[in-house]
Amino acid sequence: MNKTEDQYYIEAVRKGNVQAFSYLVEKYQKLVYTLALKLLKRPEDAEELAQDTFIKAYQKLDTYEGKSKFSTWLYSITYNAGISELRKRRIDFKSLEDQRFSDQDEMKMHDYYSETKKEDQEKYLNLALGKLPEDDQVLVTLYYYENQSMDDISEITGLTVSNIKVKIHRARKKMYSLLHEMLNEEIYSLL
Amino acid sequence: MNKLDKQFEEMMKGIKIDSPSSDFTFKVMSRIQAEAAVQRPHLLLDYKPVISKKAWIILIAAFILIMIYITVSGKDSSAAGDSSFWSTVSNSLNPLKSREVSSIWQKGMGVFSSIPPIAYMILLATLALWTLDSYLQQFRHNHSKA
Image 1 (cartoon, rainbow over the protein chains, first blue to last red):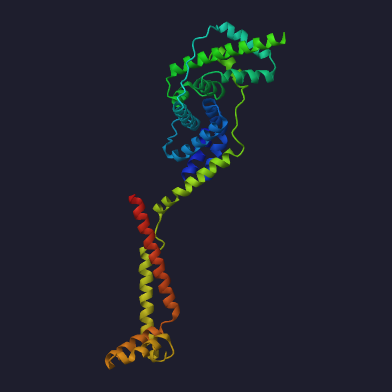
Image 2: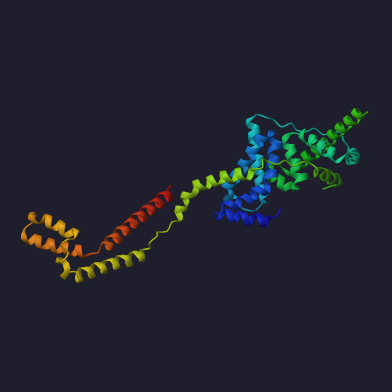
């Protein structure tokens, strides 16, 4: 993330150059949309939420003080809007239980996973991620894919850092466990 | 990040990141442009009068000087403009007035008839500009209160 570059375009928008905002839309649209899709599932709803996120960001641009990264601020708008939409739909998040998967099992599973074909890896990884509760999918994506720090994720979600650590740890174990099941199923189907 | 986290991060780099529709930026920017258009009246808050007070003083002084010049230089030729509009008006009103009033009236009409039409046009344009200027200032004042 280039904070200075973002800041340059933010300043341009604040000075009245509306078109400069398209740079920020182009840069962050994929991840904003991905987070929205993880929460709402339906592509049409996710697209609408992603659009609303950018409109809200534009309207509130004067309140962005630049203390955190622009992406952190933007993702927090997406996350909060998505969560309130899910609350309207009365969808409760199931919290993951501690998995019996040990650290050694994780290592073995990782080696096993690395030996599978690239296209299968992507398929199973997306399937496993999709089976996590919506909010955990967001945490995992932000932490492992987007490399956001625990503090940034805490700012985005409003959860405490210790809570995020526990959630991410459980989510990782759950994903390995799901991958284990899926890859085993495939071996059995081949036999 | 511990080793397990690192190897999971490697794995996660392989996930497919989703993309919105191809015209996503266009859709967002259209909505933002519409939003900005609604906000545009606020630009009037920064409105500054087209003609400054100083310029108004110069314009009025110049106008008065022109009027004085025309009045002074046009005294002798005031009777010459028989066929002008002002003379026609003056003649049509003649029977209604006494001799003295008629004399003053004729003098006055004579002065006006000697003013070239361009001077009236300038006066009209200045008044129109002043009206618009006052209206915009009033508009800005109301918006800043709101």
